[in-house]
Image 1 (cartoon, rainbow, N blue to C red):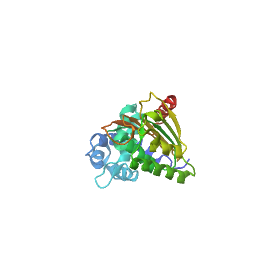
Image 2: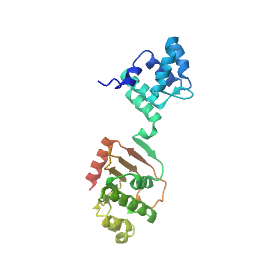
Image 3: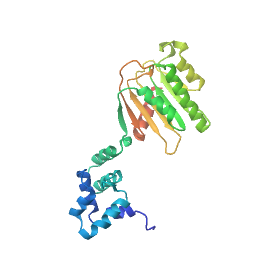
Image 4: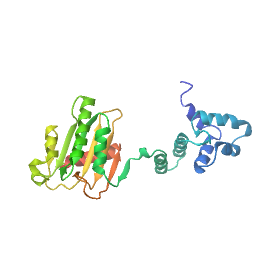
Length: 249
C-alpha cells in the first residue's frame, strides 16, 4: 500500500486530534494553539501544529478550524455514532451548495431557464405546466440554452412537454412557445386536467447534473408572486418527479 494513502485519516485518528477537532468546532473563535495547550503534551505542540496546517485542518493566519477541518469533524462524529442528520446539516452549513432542496421565493421559471442556458451538455428537459407562453426574452433564453447544448453534444436535447390542449393556451394556435417546441421536435402531450408545474433538466456531463423545480409558477410571462422548491442533484427525488411527469402524459 502507498505510504501516502489515508495519511490524513491516520493523523486524525492519532493522539488528541479528534478531541481538538471537536473543541475547535464547538468554540469557533478558539485557535489551534489554545486547544493544543489543553489537549496535548507541550513537547508535541509544534509537531501537531505543523500537521494540522499540512493537512489543511486549520487556516492561516488565525489557526482557526478550516472548512476541511469542519468536514473531518463531521466524519469523526458519524464514526463515533453521532446523528447522521445533524452531520448532514453541518456539512450543508459548511457548503451551502451541497443542499439538495432549497426554497425559491421568486423567479422559479427564470431559475430553470438560467440553468438551461448555463449548464454544459444538456441531454434531457422535461416541462410540465398547464400554460406555456414565454415572453420573448424568456423564449430566447430557452433557445440559446438548447442551441448551446446542440453545439456541446452534436444533437438537440430531448425535450418533453405536458400541458393543456392548444385551445386552452394563450393565443391558441399562434402560441410562439408551442411553435418553438415544434421546431425542435419536442414531444408534447396534452392533459386537459393539468395543474402541476414541474421543470426538470439532466446533463450528459460527468458527473451528470440533475435539477428540478416544483412550485406554483407557470411556464409563461412573469405575472404573480410565486413560490417553489429547487431540487439539486437528489437522484432519488428527481427519479420520482420524472415518474410523476411520465404518469401525467
